[in-house]
Length: 382
Ligand code: HEM
Image (cartoon, rainbow, N blue to C red; front, side):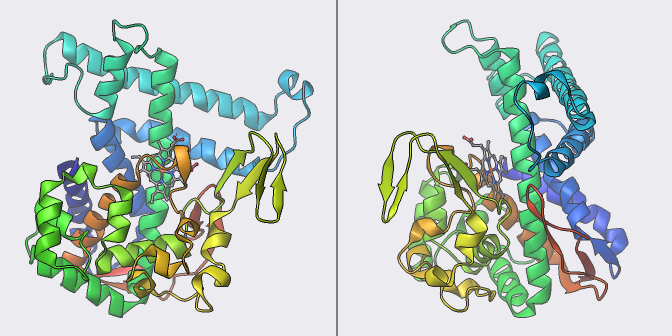
């Protein structure tokens, strides 16, 4: 998986060679990158193959954003559909058809005995889902609808969020040149100027400066990267880790947070939640609350995470939840943090980033928090 991430970033950097010294629209560049990463790692395909799906998902999300607060009347809305609803159904069907095409291609490959590994349909996410679809044990088998649904969720959940997060990270690196230097120095101290990142080095980027690096490096080697939980990642931080967490706090991609049903009457402090009531937890408001983070809450200060999340949150560690909380917490949090570390490390090894004078700061609160007019960065080769 890491190798696929590295290969995807390599492709982007290859494209950038022609843009050195020029202005680059980072949000769009990272859209291609994050699409490529999900396509390769989860579906064993390329962005080109998944392009149609991402295009349709993008249009679906735009429709969802426009209609987010539209009130529809019960029963009548089942009979009369708006133009947007009809378009959403058409797109949804298009996405399902494209996913079926990708599934069929994989099944064909297996039939022809090409590209089949010991896991039958492949060890990536798509392969495991197809395997489950063909499972002879009825209790484990998943239907084609479930398979399509899982793929749709992963395409949607893994791309937009990572696209937004990485874009804000690049912006903050370009604005805060001191942090750009700190993160670059850390990357160079671990990987040197090697253009190819190795896995042990990536593990070392997870290690806290407060503990002996050799001790933590030893632990990171013993544990496979996958098994290092998000909690492990956030407890043991280096500059890069602190920088990523501070970006996720300031520019929380899923800024709206989540909605949970209150299953039965519950009391929390002075609040009583009644059965059936929906409770909205707005992440971005919690991440910008001075009572939790202090008076400098709006300032960019990665070092606030130096002594861990509990210290940064005034002993309210659950107040930091860019990836949600509980049973439905983001399934791709480790994936996203690794993707961010690899991307930032590889970019900073090669380029110094400067914000273009033409950049207009306008975070747009859509389904994710994204830059309304993109982020224009000037790439200076090192
Ligand atoms: C910085 C990037 C990301 C952020 C900020 C983010 C954030 C979130 C949030 C807030 C949720 C809802 C959690 C909840 O309801 O408690 C979520 C769910 C989810 N995320 Fe992510 N995510 C990111 C990247 C990814 C990636 C890269 C993947 C896949 C590779 C992914 C897969 C998922 C899935 C499958 C769910 C649904 C989990 C469920 O309902 O059980 N996410 N994400």
